[in-house]
Length: 322
Image (cartoon, rainbow, N blue to C red; front, side, top):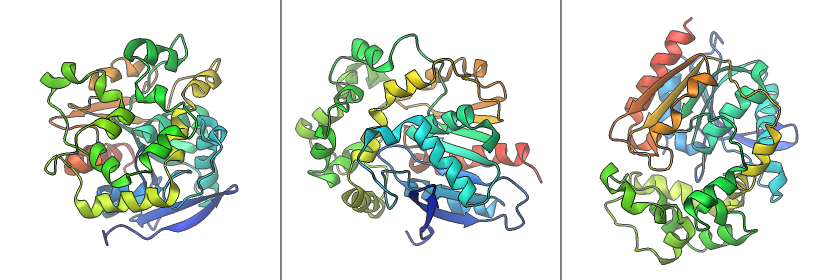
């Protein structure tokens, strides 16, 4: 844990964000890389990336998103839509005197970096999405589609209840993180897992205890997550889900394309964001390179850090050569 940088706090237009930085580009020859985590994660999720990117000659900056870790964690769900979250990113760039950055995101962070490319294209030098593809705006509200397809127990639907899911998970953060950060299921088991696998509250309440040998994150690192969520609570991340339909509405009539050079990396065994969901992305992201990491599940940065780093750094060094 000692190789992860200590945080410093940045005032991003009134939002205090915890920033963790490894600077391998003191001469500022390249745009910095801003790492945006997903849920249920924190900036520490990029532990295996920051020093590697710095050693490769990049200024690597990870943040605790608003609502997470050591950053401000307001309760109001309205502060967590894509407009508000990307506004935080732009304000962070202003505070750090950065004109443009390469935004790298995983899971919800992946969704937000694509939104950054759509809503603030003048601040985006490039985009890297891990697991999360950019999909065209659907014809109906996403929650309506999810409930029709998977039923009311899907966690996207259950997370719409005010205060309920966060209060549940806060009863036992240790169980929660051991439940989440598990080895991926083989593809031949997927059909038998759906839709029950998407009932995260139900699995947390009534499922068996996570097997001791099923984890993909060392226990010392799991403890970092547990401590962080005991400090911040779970409401920040769940508030992202409470804005799914609002984000859909705010994109009505807006351009969906991301014109910045972009890289998408999928994981072969990602049951929550299967690689097939990225098919056709090129229509929205014209300058796109795609890769899939074999034998890897959703938590790419922990499961296959060397493979992910190699793909990202190869792309960065080709597209942002000095």
